[in-house]
Length: 225
Image (cartoon, rainbow, N blue to C red; front, side, top):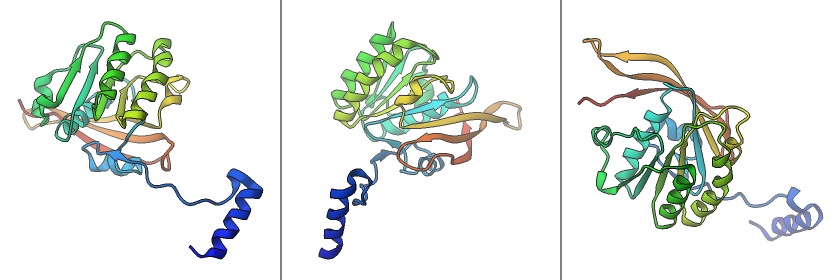
């Protein structure tokens, strides 16, 4: 950058403050979701590091399947945590998705507070990704605990992924840097009429790091037993 241009920028910054031109910030770091289509959809190459990504959608939309496939992918690269509040996670299913169970910690808390405290402690201790399966829409306890968890995630460079049936007016959405909404479009069956997966439409409804509004079709397949 030439001296004259740098001087002009300095003058404008003095006169206009935050409205003045400034060097572009580096791209936000991200961890791959395990789906090239999703990584492209986010605009930064995956789930943002040190921030919260929200997977939203009604029951049967595929949000939990997508999250668990992302978790399986994350275990191949580092320590991963799954906060299983509903108590429905099947480690065998994750194994069939290619997860390295030696790098996975499963937490089954008895309360939202236990879930958030466990997530915060493990994030600060070095977990690369923490997935929170908290399907209780409108729970004020989640809203109250999220700021503390986000603070720890930022300090630790931990990626947070939240599965939540959040509605448009749910305060939880405020804390998410990225919201990916899923809608099921079709079931996928084998020739033997066995359920093999689902086809979903994924749309970025909020993005603080890139342009929102992007959408794509995803095929979420269930692994063979």
